[in-house]
Length: 75
Image (cartoon, rainbow, N blue to C red; front, side, top):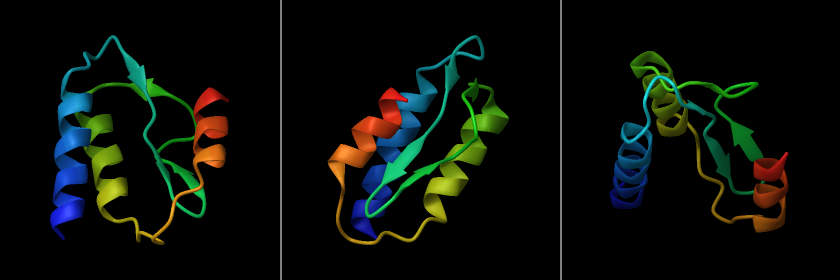
C-alpha cells in the first residue's frame, strides 16, 4: 500500500503540472504495458482523474519489462 500511495503521489504531481492544452497518456508497465487511453488525451481534470483511477485499479504483477515500457512510450 505504501508503494502504491507513492506511485499515485508521483502521478498526481506530474499530471498536475500539465495544462488542458497539453496532451498525455499514462502507461503502466510490469509484465505487460497498459495504457490508460487508446491515444493521447487533453490533460483535462476529467482525463487526469480517469488515468489515475485506471492506475489505482491496476493489479501489480511484481516485475517490470523495461524494454517493453520504452518501446511503448516511444510508439
